[in-house]
Image (cartoon, rainbow, N blue to C red):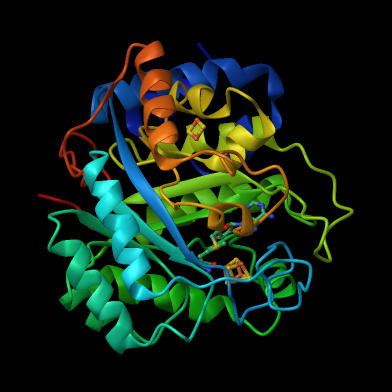
Length: 352
Ligand code: SAM
Ligand code: SF4
Ligand code: FES
């Protein structure tokens, strides 16, 4: 076995230089995926946690160059769900057996703090764990949502290279993104972050820094997916196809953060028909099926070709369960909180 992979599997620590060496050597990919699969099995077991994803608004005040929801995209049909409709979707998802829901949207100021607290309260009354993924907010707002019962917050750093981040996210500040992540953590949320792989101008060194950042910030879940160019954005001419590299960044993240939750992302399946299954066998232990009902899911178009846009929540639920069972894994009946392990030395907040 390659010495660096052995070191990662045994100690869960690698330097930036060591990560770069592994990221650059394509001949090691399968060995890395197998090692990440073993570490996943050892630390988080064979169950897969399902998080039902409600995409409740595609209206966004931000203008991220990569995203189809960016405010300057006039080629998209915009929608926002009334709170009662979002509650209705949550109740339906509950009836399909989900134990966790994710509320995701653009940065849409229609949803005032009071509206969001009402929605959070209703979802929590269904006895579900709840993740928010609604962008950058003031600390006080994060605090209100936490008090209202939100359990987790997902805010990808996207890339840890400050210059690239600020090029891709006009009007946004890298330092504020990091500040938000720290505040979310301090407020007692389970912290989710992550990155895109294959962004224009992104180097292997940046990806190594991303993985080390996940460890340093003390993330409880990490979502990694390939960047997929959207025809209606300024990055439309960028080359697509970072499936294998995003799988590798994900697998290395599993090796360095053995007990966190890692989703097999939708973007991976968009680039590879079996993408989520491959990811689940390369370190992932979570899937996030779409539970948005009706026509809305096709309008939540971050990029073209997104999977499941013409399917129903009921169909997706049975589809993903079948896929998971087909690789000898089972769907968890639990809320899927991170169970911190004491059996390795990690420096991100420690459990004992
Ligand atoms: N507005 C919130 C935010 O930005 O954190 C949440 C919604 S945003 C659509 C969710 C994630 O979609 C982003 O964090 C980004 O990584 C991902 N995303 C956006 N455009 C993408 C693209 N073209 N390819 C792959 N992922 C993309
Ligand atoms: Fe808005 Fe999020 Fe898309 Fe940026 S990534 S444009 S914040 S929805
Ligand atoms: Fe939606 Fe398979 S998960 S069709």
